[in-house]
Image (cartoon, rainbow, N blue to C red; front, side, top):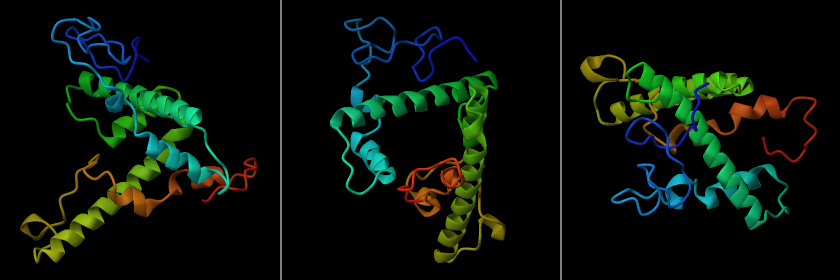
Length: 191
């Protein structure tokens, strides 16, 4: 694992600057002549989305405090930045500019989140299947063949061009098996 804080934008010489609100990207801090500011809304997931995800796992009559949502918002945003930073470092070392799903799966393992690697790989596989199906359906609805030149549709491994597409159809299958384990005694889970 690298010796820096993941998810934080690198400054001019490759080091990572702090992500606190009001800290400039250039590492000079607030008031550091011409530095871009990282707004809280740009570094955190929308709190409404976080709350909606939290509610899915709770009984219907459960309430979630604002403090709990804000705490979870900070945690998940930092977690995503941490994993993405490691994946980005891998891409940088390999002289690639695009982080793909395989890089994210690799980062989970490299950072010790081994229990997440297989579910993420299954999700990524299902995502790619659904993306391919959707591309083929779109091509046929336009009257074109299955892809350019009549071949199979263009399919780019690691493509994440649609944020809302297949994940909705895939549902919660990613962690469904883990939730059904005998040692998991929470009965209110919707999956």
